[in-house]
Image (cartoon, rainbow, N blue to C red; front, side, top):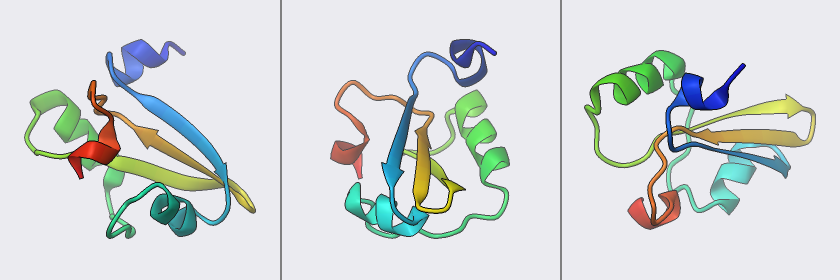
Length: 82
C-alpha cells in the first residue's frame, strides 16, 4: 500500500498511549465525538475539498493505544487551524 496514493500529499499518523477520546483531548481537539460514516466523510472532503478546517480520524488500535490520522495536511499544522 502506498499511503501517498491512498491519502494524497498531506497526511500524518500519530500513535499515542491512552483511550481515543483522551488522546484527542490531549492533542487539543475541543469537541471530539464519534462520527457515523467518518470514512465516507473523509473521502468526500479529500475528493471535493468541501469543508473548512481539519478532520482527524482516530481509533483505538489495542487497549490503551490510540491511532489518529490527519488526511488534510497543512503547512502550519492542524492544531493551529482548529
